[in-house]
Every structure is written in structure tokens, then in C-alpha cells.
Image (cartoon, rainbow, N blue to C red; front, side):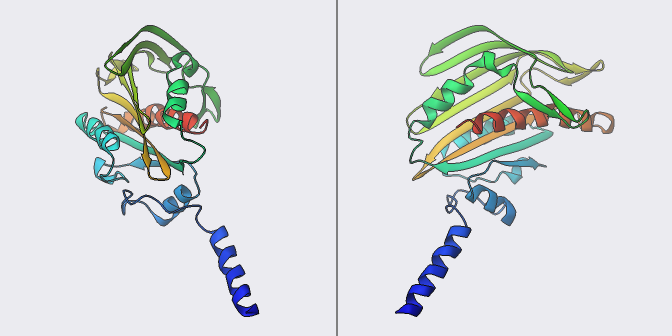
Length: 242
């Protein structure tokens, strides 16, 4: 009996040191062991992707599939995922909560962004001004002017939808973006999508950022740093508040 109790204690300790929970079955083999461990611990995982073929979730969730198809449609040269898994218990009203946070568009100004080039923090957006807001058919649509250096003014359309089981957000540029006189992004070719879906006793928080921009040697690093790091910062910022 003593040996049985000792074995039980050892097993319990081992489990306590291991995963917080098992990942939903929709996660695929694209995740490394280290990435799986990070998600199992409830941490935010950021993945730089070479291709849409590297998405870490396959099927099972309509809104995540919708997000992936939308990003695929712009044929991104730059691509990233931001993922987190958290318990449903204690977060039952997560769609309502994240909607309240992320649709406070004026709060985008002041989100801290770490510049790898300058090794210090800057504002992700220097200003964020709502131009109009409408609601129709369960979809909130916001037109906003966001200013992001070094690309200047970004005329942006933001849509937001929610139910008790999911949340879905899309941000799209409406104007041409330039850098040093070069056209970098045409209208509609930079998108950030966030899909939050319930999976049994868990929530999956899934963000994708994609940019269809020239992948040329003298612009690659600047575009990747300026756009993709900012998209990753944006998703991580709001995920960390939940």
C-alpha cells in the first residue's frame, strides 16, 4: 500500500510538471515539440511562416478555416500566426470581452512596439481615428485612419462579428502603402485576422497576418520587420489582456 501511494505521488508530480492540458485535435504536425509545449502551457505562440501550407491548424473550426482562406486569397509573401489556447472555464464570455477590447479602435494608438532596429519601444500606431462605424446583419464595420511609421496613413476597414461560441475580426488596408517612394502594398493586400473559437473545454485564439508585398532583397527585411512584427505585436497585445 505504501508503495502504491508513493507511485501515485510520483505520477501526480510528473503530471503537474508536464502539460497544463492536451491540445485540441485540430492542431497538426506542423507544430514542433517546443511549440506544442508552449501552447499546452497556455502561452502565446508566434510563428513566422514561409507558406500557407505551414498553418498549424487544419479543419474542425469554420471561423479558423474562413480566416485561413481569406489570407490565402491575397497570396501573401509575408505571413505569421499568433496562437494561444486557454480554458473555457472562467472565460465563458470571451467573445464579448475580446470584442470590447479590440473594437476600441482609438486604443490602438499607444500599443507598445519593440523596434529591433532601434532597440527601444515605440507606439505601434501614432494615431488611430475612427471615421465611421455601422452595424448590419450582425457585423460591425469600422472605417479608421491608422498612422504607422514609416508607412504613414493607412485607411483601414475593420469588421467584427461574434456569437457565444466564436469571435471573428478582420482588418484590411484600403489605400496604397509606400516606402521610400516604392509601392509596397496595394489596397486590400494587407490583412490581419483574428478568430477565437470554442473547442470543448478550451478556447483557441488564432491570429494570422498576411501581406502581399514585393519579396525583393533590398526591401525584404524592412517589410518583414515593419509589417509582420507589428501584426504579431497587435495580436499578442490583445491576447495578453484576456
